[in-house]
Image (cartoon, rainbow, N blue to C red):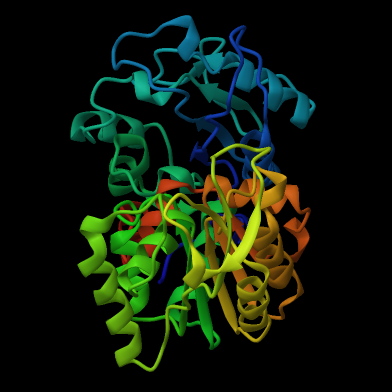
Length: 402
């Protein structure tokens, strides 16, 4: 897709002296006292902010935080802790401005080139979630260049993500969003084959549209967790008392048939790791997938299956990974996910991974540097896998055409 990159505007000197409005994703976790417990998103936002400052722009940055009620600001909604942490990372003071929609003033004056302010929680503004045209136009009037750098919000058409991009003089993608677009395009729009997708999780229902979409495109569709159990049922196998969705067997069979019609496949586990209880210290038993007892819980794929899938991953050209294939949080049932993670790390394929549990697995096995691209988008990443065009991508492409 075609879109304007903020990095290119800066390189060409087009941000010099301009008012730049950055929509970042600074929605970080906090403890009960309001202290930030994990600051990855703040650290990730620094590159775009520094880029704008170095280019000689007057810089405004905003984000949502938590789930505030529009028009009803509370202290818990404040970006003050975020502004403090950003200031520490940048080595400068980051003033936090409230009631900024009708004008951004610092010490009573218009923001000057080289200055930086944080605009209070944008989701407190009335009309934000419904993408109010009035609000969007007011935001757009604050800037010369709008920079969308919050992939985690790219699937939402809100005033600070979509509406402002409609009406700002220039709308472009910041470095984080541009990297996401590039990675997604490389993995799904123009992949190097074979293209292997791993889709795992507890329920088929939450990933059904993703499975359908990928079935039309991928060469191997590896399913794991409760999803794999449902596919095992669809293949006529017994799964004991394992988590599954029997009412979705027709949908699972349809995915299997769609893959088969293209000469592709959904590999069904040949061995599994079972337990009688869902507990970290439960006795783990490896058995053939055909030997699952009526009181068994399948909590992981077996070593034979893991080895076979690892072999496929090592031969892949592109890998899309969303979800661990077993209960990897329990040491006795992490073998499958660990084998998959290591195979992806060792593969020469371009890999893109996303989803909270996936990121946790990547961190656990310390393979961050071996993954081609790690998406932090959550819901946005899932919607891309579903084949949807994200609102942020749509409006930026439209604005790039003029």
